[in-house]
Length: 435
Ligand code: GDP
Ligand code: IMO
Ligand code: MG
Image (cartoon, rainbow, N blue to C red; front, side):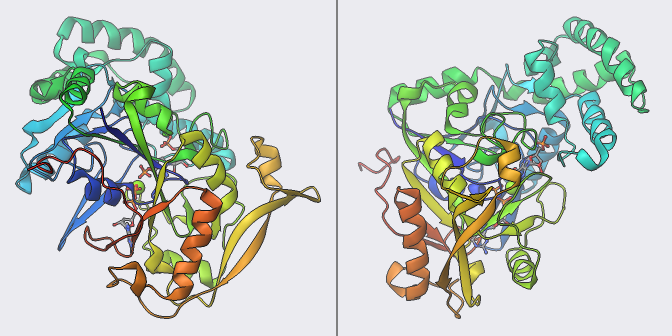
């Protein structure tokens, strides 16, 4: 029963889209298990670049069943736009299945997210403004709408009327516009009509696939350091990107997971507010941002850039029980004379090796670095480990040693094939592999 979870080990944008697409060739089903259209996952095949916010990054393969799991919050307007974009590229979207129990991001969730961020002003989280927090909040408060509700008019009207009673009070108190029931009901019905053929019982799709012996890949959004429980609260997202989230949000049990692949890049980035001990404010940082095209896929915001930090890496490997790592964007470090690797922090005069759970302590962390000599030459065209510059191999080995888990692939460019196999043990069940 092989199920493999793909998780971000940093603050998101580690290249999960590229990694999922690369590995999806070998599986039957790919599932998104949490987050919503705050995610932006990029897949590059040949000259074509596809940015996905809700559909799992395996959707481009004709053999994949793509599942949007119950743990995802779905903005139906975004999903419909994405399906239209994929249809325009000739992708058969009938294989996109959407959990009936996934919650709906309503227009008032988006308005509340934005209004709350302006109210927080200098203390804002720096959300993507997609209504993620308010939608998950309503889910927990049992005030939410689920995808199945979009096709039942009476139920829609009842749920929206109840929700708007306090949403409108809140919106007005924040100086934002009110919503009326009937226009929202009409919009939801139109969404429901369009999405009806995709609604499904996603847990049984996944469970039946596993029972048949098909390989299922579960694709996380965001990253461990943005996790609602494990990240630096309140500068986090409102779901659980960590591997445990794949169980609750993807419809599988913990013992059905046989591999957790952590995805990270060769340096660090963060979008939005919150502590970032290794952040760079100099020319080196600007160079990395430029070469790495570090602008948000969803919001276009400049991503903050810093050196790789092994302190949260060790934490992320532990809480995800990562069994293998994919290292992306090594190519972006070409041309840097000395690469710094954060190995520990100094907090209040003491050396700290463990990621502190306290946000206040983290805010005072001063990185302790080890220096690594860099390499000059571009490595985009390298396809075997032996052809990487020695200093690049040394840096990769140091990262691996800190992680305590094998780095199985090294990526040297955005395109599907710009990938170096390092210590990969092929996944057990490839379609056609036994033929
Ligand atoms: P995700 O949210 O984790 O899927 O990552 P994003 O797609 O938001 O951001 C990663 C960006 O880096 C995308 O533009 C990818 O095309 C690109 N990318 C992924 N791997 C590599 C790599 O090894 N080298 C380079 N240069 N770009 C990469
Ligand atoms: P992918 O899947 C990077 C960040 C936001 C903000 C915080 C909360 O592409 O890696 P939210 O809108 O979720 O309430 O915002 O989380 N954030 C991301 N940062 N990559 C993402 O997704 C992100 N999704 C949310 O910038 O700091
Ligand atoms: Mg992204």
